Length: 174
Ligand SMILES: [Zn+2]
Image: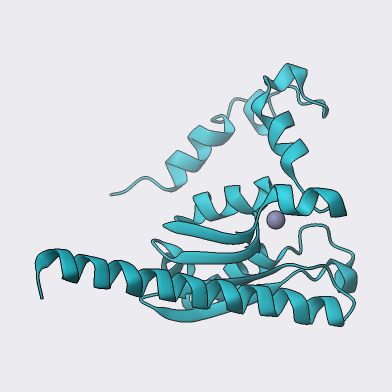
C-alpha cells in the first residue's frame, strides 16, 4: 500500500465514522420527534467511542437551555469530569445554535460536525441563523440590551479586595 493509499484509506475511515455518528445523531433526533420533542440529537465521541448522547428536552422541561448538545456535554461532565470533553468530537443532527457552540468551545471540544444546515432548518422555523447574525453586530447594535455598569459590592466598599482580586487571593498557589 502506498502512502497515498494509506492516506486515502484513513480519510475513508474518518468519513465512514463521521457518517455513522451523524446518522446516530439524526436517528436520536427522529426518535425525539416521535416522543413529542424537537428534531435535535447529539452524540459525543472520544477515541472513536460514543461517551454520551443527548436529545432536545425542551418539550419535557420547558427549559430553553435543554438542547441536545448541552445535555450531552453535561452527561459527559457528570460521568467522566469536564476534562473528558477536551478534544472530544460532537456530532449533531442540526447546525448547533450559538449557545451550544459557545458551550462546546468553553468545554474544549475539538471538532463538531452536523447533518442538517440552518438553510435546511429555515423553512421549518428551526434555524438559528438570525441569532448568529445578531451576535455578529457590535453589542450596542444587538436586539438585546447589554450594558457594562461597574459597581462595588458592600465588602469592596468597606475596603476589602475587589471581587476578582478576592478570588485570586483565595486561589493563590503557595
Ligand atoms: Zn443549542
